[in-house]
Length: 315
Image (cartoon, rainbow, N blue to C red; front, side, top):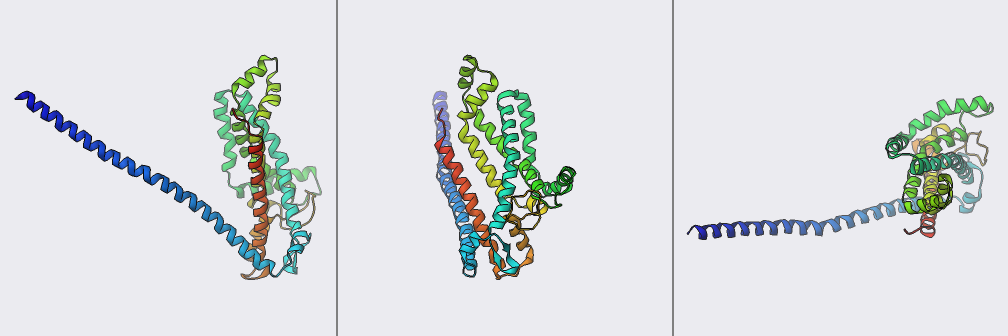
């Protein structure tokens, strides 16, 4: 009798476990079915947001180009919207000037930092230095702007007496400082992905550590490094607050970094603050400038993708 009772108890216990497993499996199956749908919804939402932004830019830009000749907009060098002159090259030159200065600062420092973190520093120092470097990315850009205006410009003025109070040089330098963490982090990730066997092989053949870094590791991680440059350029082109505060609001078709200039983002900020009435040609001009900025950024992103695919190494 006791054995029969124990058998019934075991059967009851097993039945409860089976039922519990069925319930758990049912919950897991429900989650497995829902997760792909949620991920699909997130993907669709991202695409819809992009389409919405693009539609807004193009629809409002069409209104602007109905009043302003598109060829004079693209080829003109005089940007004086309150006088009816809409030559966007004055803003484009200012944007490119800031970008060139920023990349002159960011690329050498960023790549050198990445080389040290990837090839020379110990794990202990890497865990300390990399977070400290990435702190620069967390500083608000408005703080960078006032830093450029109140510190960098006076320092530069002691070396360049003719430097304007608002100028492209100080703004470009600080934009370069801001994007150093992006370039350093992405470059370090690309270099760390290179297998150690390649380093060890080069060292075994008699190469020094510097030769191994410059002739083996850097070429092997070229796609990731150049992609980081392209993303840094896109970030510099789209920077707003630093240039709006430190570079001035004087649209000039010039490559003189000591002068006050205006970028495309700086002009958008100026008009968005209420300097132009809703529905006016000047108001719609910010969408035309925004579309131009979108095209620049899109080209850089496509270039980064092309370079990554063209020169990607498979390990």
